[in-house]
Image (cartoon, rainbow, N blue to C red):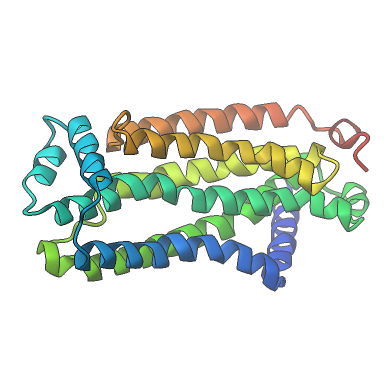
Length: 276
């Protein structure tokens, strides 16, 4: 395996991303909303506006019911006011699953452009006739999507933490962020789901005839994330470090299976037939 060629492919794709203002705008807009604008607006709103909506109370009760008998549940129940409980629950139990949209959508957009963009720019033929194997080409494309996606996600996590801590420390008297859920999510689940998203979308984009077709197929990955968010909001599914570790392990196994499946397409004519 020629590592130099792999990194050349990855570097070429990353340069293509960084050189386009429109692409950068799309990659940064969602993280900016979830890591800066949303927590800033939400925490300030809850702190300074009287809570009259029964939906917030129901949300906290659903989470407490799912955490009944646990240390976290007792911690939330012991908080001095409903405002404290709402902020704690939203920050540590709901935003985590929504935060998964950042690496998923960014990785999806980059990966979809990887092959479809080559086809639309008529540069795929050059790649196929270059001295590189399909496996090396895939790895290069995966790296090109993984590196910017994971960097943007971790930077967003840092910004989210700075804003959350600065707005809540005086209110709670201690750091409510990050907890074990967040650390497990960001450094185990996020890398796994980012790789899974990239593998699926690189494969889809390699077989798709156009960006719209590839986007429709690749976007299905977002549905389980929304299901996770809804499950937590209703109290049906409460995440914890063990549950997140299990999710990461399952995705790791799926990544391994998907990689094995993709290695079957080690022939250019098989992988790209009728696509060029």
